[in-house]
Image (cartoon, rainbow, N blue to C red):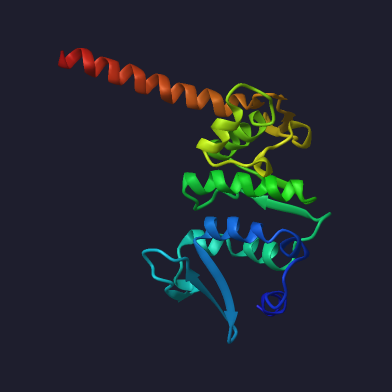
Length: 208
């Protein structure tokens, strides 16, 4: 708690140089953390909660799990850092897992080396989208505008290294203009889709 109190009184060099990063993080967290009277409180962003403030221990699992990365980015982060996160997708809605991928890209482009372990197909697929946006193709600008992406979200594939845990070892995953190929993820997704198609097709025939 003493470390949290000490760090909470200053802004990180990264936030000073890139204040827009705080807005993206706040959007993922859904509010702000505040340290006062030896206690960490959470204030919800404007919306249904009407700026309600609660003690951290009363917050959701997502609010609690995002405290460390919020503390790091807002009060500690600087260019040249190494950030290690184990399964950042934990307790996060798929939409926020995608936003987390965009946050990591911003950190990488600001000079932070980001290392993560993940089981999230949403996270990987979003990183793939950001890699694909690094290519020149027809309607690229229109697609970026439609889905509210900016050039700051674009990820250069040369900055990415991915390893898959297979047979008690780490195997490099291929990365090309279409992103990261993780056969273990893709196989499960395809099987689920195939099973869904088989079931719904059978149901349609039965109801005809």
